[in-house]
Image (cartoon, rainbow, N blue to C red; front, top):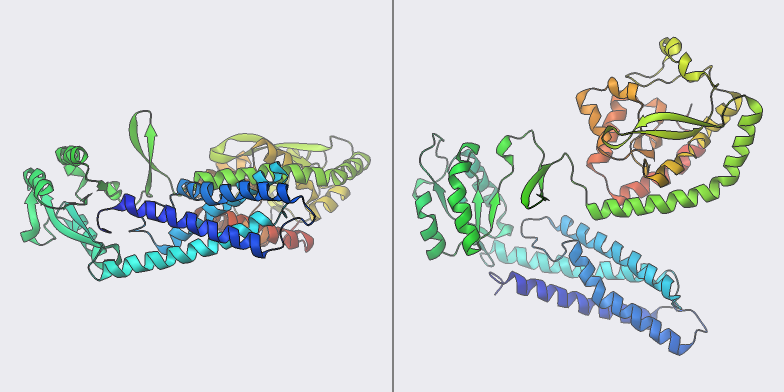
Length: 469
């Protein structure tokens, strides 16, 4: 049953998750003190019933949006648990919003407690289930038959990969090749068939998947195989290294009615990025409200200390090099930009970045604002507008980018931020090359949890003024 019934397995997973949700929700309701004391019993029961339906029925359906119920045969356990985590995080957000909209007589912590308990319960059941399936596959059960197109080095590499991962439960049913290429045969010759034999193989043998691992020069000749697989419903997988190892893994997308492969250095989750944007909007709006007295006081001090505008507008480059006007409290004299070229010999930073610790253009009020990073507060408006994010690589100026090496430009592939790894790691104490490496590391390993850690590290970095000038 486990071999061929993936849909049945997904249905069983969905059903078991609903049962787990019911048990967890009921347990929290009966044992916790997260209900508001003195609430009308009828209102309480109605609210808990509504929240229970959402948590126990809609919650698992939301997990499906994060591919929690997709096949994890060739995925690591950590990746499956990561999808489960983000699905639960989205569920907590929705449950909190519904509880707030209903004015449910429960503590604001109720959705969070339920989400944590739900994640622990589902992660435990998933780990046990996936561990059991992998054990069965290692011992020869729950396997799938794989037909590999090609017989050269790429096919041999695919064979070696399958041999290294017996927990995937993939058996090689054979190889097929057109015999017209000059590619060296690197697989057992007794397992090689001709392209013309593919329809018979698919008809007479149980083939669960076809893997294309042939040279790029053979792609035109495998079209009949692709059509045959599509006609009878056998999945076909195309290895994405056809153009060499210098390209990153692609993501399948659509170009109108055509399927497309998108090659990008990093494929961030669209849902996670949407959550990041939601946090940016809420955080910047709240930050502007809280910081308004500080901004008013700083504006008065700037006005009294030197002539000129209170706000300083500067062109910076955002995601993919889009120019925008960044807002800062003015900390320099009004003609500071025209003086920059004359002061370039005093630059204390390597690379294209210009920094002077005791910059003669900075006013006495500006020195105080810079020391406590208060001049950056107006950038919360840039975050609210969508030019920037709370966390991300700092936005460079056009003249800095003009001096970038080719690889440095990849830091423009993500929305710039007010704070970043560079700022919490020492700022001006870090050389330009190490700064670029930190930004690229952030992009390559980005996660919502990482953004939260950087935000928390920003507080002591500002208070202790590490690397500020």
